[in-house]
Every structure is written in structure tokens, then in C-alpha cells.
Image (tube, rainbow, N blue to C red; front, top):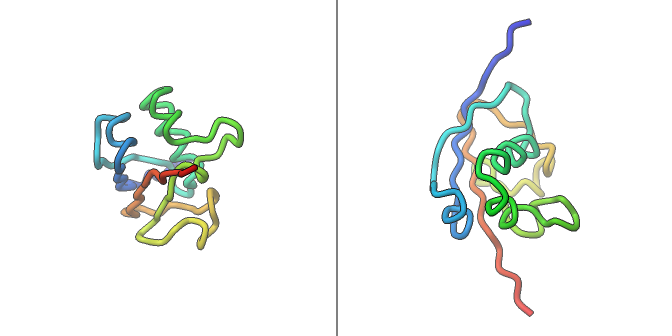
Length: 100
């Protein structure tokens, strides 16, 4: 079976940039992969410190901690974590601050 790969351009902002040591890069994914797969891949690649900044441990979900944009649109307006990625998509991940 022939597997097609896509390139997704990722931009990390703030604490995510610090935790990963990168601000922008391209990730190769299988065609049809989702934001959820991208998040898992980034956590595996950049380790526990990065995962702590990105993913809420109680919900195992990145959305309480970050805004995720695909081509400038927030994933909550698309298919949330199941938003499929296409070749050349631009994904921006922005940490949000919580006050108290």
C-alpha cells in the first residue's frame, strides 16, 4: 500500500518555543492525519517539559492550555482535535494565560 506524506508548517509561540527550542519547523505526517496526531507527535519529539506546557494532564487535552490555529482559524471553529491536516497547512500553537 502506497502511503502519501504531507508537510505541515508548525509555529510555536511563547513557553512552547522555549520548551521545544524551536519557533517554526515543518513536520511530515501521513496524509489524513489530524491535529490530535500532530499534538501527540510533538509531545513525543520534544519530551515531558514540552508536554507539560501543551497538554492539560487532567483532561489529556491541549485546548485548556493553548489556542491552536490551522491556516489562521481556531480549531474550535473547525473539527476541533479531529481537524484533518493537508499538505502545506500552517499550524500555530499559542499558549494562553490563566488568571486567578
